[in-house]
Image (spheres, rainbow over the protein chains, first blue to last red):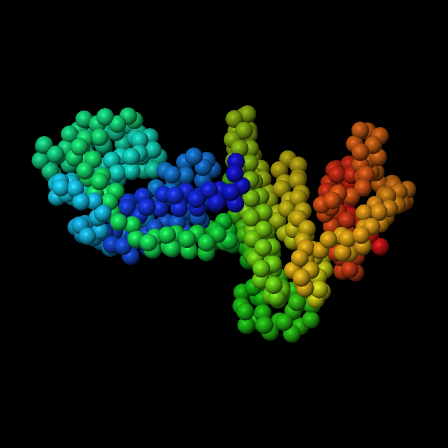
Length: 172
Length: 280
């Protein structure tokens, strides 16, 4: 059991090592740099306050992602933004030739219902396992799994059948 | 992963991260580091039954300034403020009065001492909360009746032993009561001029160990004869007092004298409690 000082140090180290990931996740929700930074800051403040409730530091990642996602969702709720602003290609470092199709898929993910969207984001973009996602969303893994397939269905419908192949090779 | 999602991830991964992010994270974590643990707890604080004269200096700086004029209370109000924390649930009852020093003219020292106090106290609270949950679980698993469970009681308070223009000496006492009670004390002796911790050799000279040991042996002897007190003497396998440690706990009393303190069980049977020796 770490004392609270060490735990805090560990958490801050974890934040700094993964800060870019957090930004991309939050930015995907806020679609605005200033708002993304605000949400991240708010999430860190909340996390630091609640750090004493985290008893096992191996769950630091899923614990913090839960806070980060909750803060992002709160932000959307507050803004009452029913639709996301389109991603500005200006903020992308990537310039593959299939940009437009890829952007379309990326955007389609964020038009999914919340209960599907978070699963897809965490699974494909954050490379989490179903177990991890279950912890982040505090939902049983079996539910996550079934929603995951439903989410793929919904994406397929949105984009046309050829885009999304539901066969997923990733291990759980 | 199927190729189309892979491309969407490329989009995601290529979102440019602004340099400001590092600044935001840096300033958020730095600023909060000191207070973090206590803030959420303090928002639940409900303790109200405090002496008005003591709480006012904490609440209102204008009021505190007024009180400076009154001797004694003035110094205390100026240098000592405290924060209350009270929390009660089915597992534990926690009551904390945490001191904070300010206005000593040495902000580095204040920061160091206050941070250390905060960390110490939040560690104790954390430990007690975890322990209390485990106790309750074990209690129920071994057939205990939930309604009869006695929560762990944790009380942390401080005593100012002395305060002059030059010196500040105070003791934080933490008592945890469950089936038996457990007390820990932390001692702070601070030279307000230099901002350093006062050592025994500064108080009593370089042969302080001899002086203290001689005095303690003598006082033990006297107490055993006059008051029928019992100290360990090695006869039942417990060595008892064999000289002070290098990191000996002590405080400075109102007469400016060193008071050496031994924890319960350290040199005497538990029922004797904490043992203190004034060194003349």
